[in-house]
Length: 162
Image (cartoon, rainbow, N blue to C red; front, side):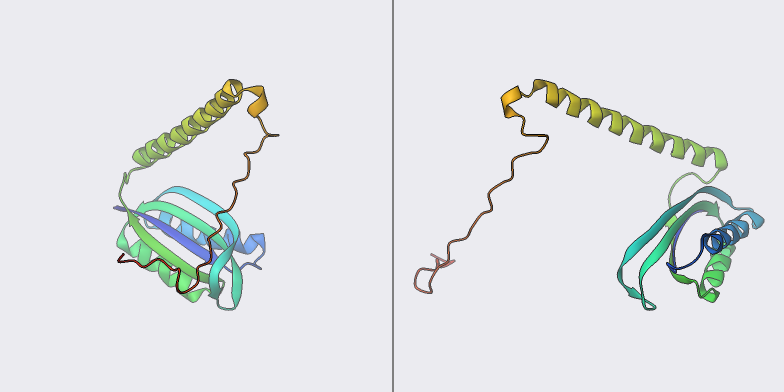
């Protein structure tokens, strides 16, 4: 067994039932072939960087799982057949392939996110306490003056070699 991530982009105008059906079908393919699903994330509707099949937006979702090669082949075959799927990408990941190992990885990542959030909240609170009252500017930093280049004529332009 190996660890994989599948990211797929669906048409943006699909109803929620169709989106759920596509995700369910993908997860059923994994579980029927003895794969283990770590997480399923719906990223939602986002703007595409370029137009795909005349669509400027797409609904993104991610499935993180452990499984074998035939699972990937079957999922990609289903994505290719389905007209509602604009694009998909399967990436092989490193990491744990058992259910317990994946749960431990997810818990560690969540703990790390929580720790970072707590640290940023405490550091921002400490900065507000240490900053003198006169230096505070209505919650925003002062805007920087833009750097304006001096226009040169052809005679005045500095040469690179001199």
